[in-house]
Length: 59
Image 1 (cartoon, rainbow, N blue to C red):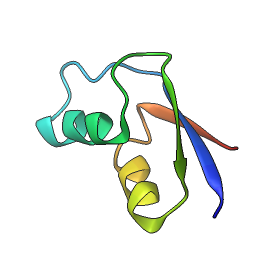
Image 2: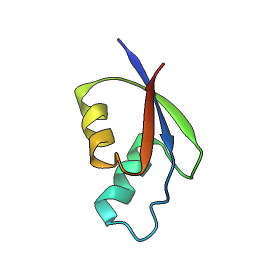
Image 3: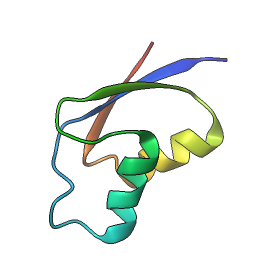
Image 4: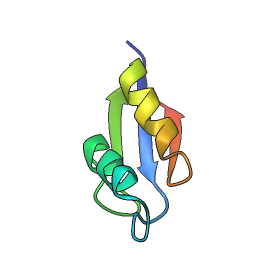
């Protein structure tokens, strides 16, 4: 399965609770943190919900 790297580039402060929880579910706790996930439909959907807070690249 394809891998995808997700990097948090903006803060979750002053964002709706569901976006904060999505960042937490992705494993992101702070700006600059990078996590790697399989590119499953579930993960891609979560990334789409917070696309304004993260950057992605193929791993």
